[in-house]
Image (cartoon, rainbow, N blue to C red):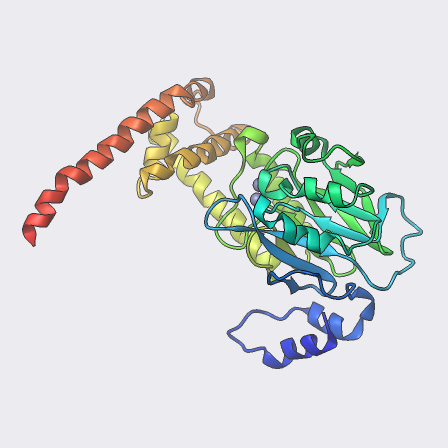
Length: 363
Ligand SMILES: [Zn+2]
Ligand SMILES: [Zn+2]
């Protein structure tokens, strides 16, 4: 971030616009966080916090998003603050979550090629929209080192990455151009999900734990877990970062507000699930139909994963009523749910088709 752009942020700030954080001021007074100039891409990108470049790249992500934020960190001036720590990896540049679609691989190559040969690649988790560009980096820079959790590494194919890699589990530090980044184990979205704290600016790269708008989905097929999700959220709140950098959507300058909002929404959803159970719902379809009655039935499938995760979380906290059998509930989560969902879906479609003539006749 240039001194001129920091000044513009401060001059243009209005009460109703986005908050301008202390990092803009930091950008004015601290030239050590400058990145190594602009990244070479025709795509729009931003540098915020100073020194952290974020390039939204088209990816195989899910709606309402279309892009995954590629984070590039390549400090210009090297500090000597790394001596007192044991680092799991050293490098001159770092990129996080290269997950763009194949037709954007050329763009990715343009970003990666000018970076130092001592490149560290960090992936927050294994989902395709976070690792689709790994093979391009491997080809362009065979000396690069990949860091990922072992649960993610296991799911990343050999075709994506077959060279140097280090399994990390949280707590380790990375040294990039003399600056320290701390790896944080943050399971919940998946069982191998990691976050990364840039210590100098106290900005937290949160992977898919948070998203720019709406709430993050948990992947039940890859060890997604609600108890872990709550614990990781508490961990992030304790860290009190200045900025949250999600991999989808915009940077968030009110981390506490966002994280507490997530907790509030999850607790409120969990309460309505508990109420449905206390009112007699015993099967997955009963609970989904009760809690998501206002929601389009085509969305009941992802909603059902959410319900399962909340029910497991309630069971772990011993909050479920005694007469509710978790074993019987689990037996209703497979074919039982799908067959009843198809029936409910068709019934809704049919009622719309039947009602339509009446509606038309009125006009
Ligand atoms: Zn994900
Ligand atoms: Zn994602």
